Length: 92
Image 1 (cartoon, rainbow, N blue to C red):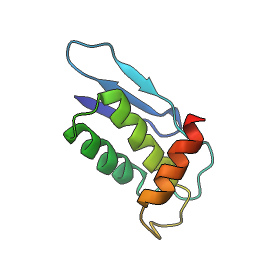
Image 2 (cartoon, rainbow, N blue to C red):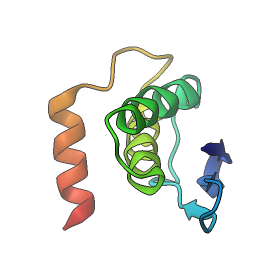
Image 3 (cartoon, rainbow, N blue to C red):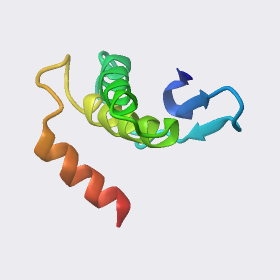
Image 4 (cartoon, helix red, strand yellow):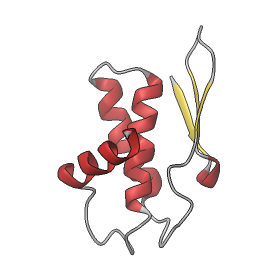
């Protein structure tokens, strides 16, 4: 499994034997991009380790990254409760 983050263009994902996927960026407004890749990797890799699909893992990772870029200089973690609220808003 492979995923490549592409900033405002979202994420490209590939898994052998399956169609490539493209996940759009979840926000276009950025305060500070530092740490976005770390947030993406942290959540998407945990989701993959839990057995989710590359598409679902990438989606969760992009949510974490979009929350991360709305904070200045990694001033705080992407918390569980705010992530769930953001996920709920995105799925409505």
